[in-house]
Image (cartoon, rainbow, N blue to C red; front, top):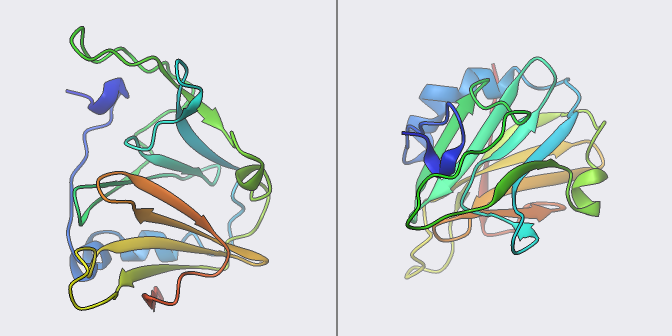
Length: 175
């Protein structure tokens, strides 16, 4: 069963920096030096806005990386499984969605297309002692002149532009 009708997308959720590094660290590190061609988002056509529950797709040409968050600390990273040129199917009659992939649907994302990725960091949230988000992992992309952070926005994806928030512990990935 595909999540939200996205063909070939069956997430494998991971928790914590160590499990994410073990499963995806080498491939994320190998993206350094590549050009970000597109950032694809799933767009809710009826509401004319980003559908934050679906993965963010980073297109580096020969590598398409899907980043998806759910719950408080679940993170899924996929490689070359989602094709944004394929239609998103309506997942059910009970809770229908009218969704489609859109490349750079916001001006901030459009500014990122064509930038070279310097490095990837796993960003571990370390807020106040009682912060429910503590330990959640975001993906930080150092794109020379700016950063893109894809973070857990409490059961959906969030995007932040510019240097990562100071409450993140940065763990730069190296080969």
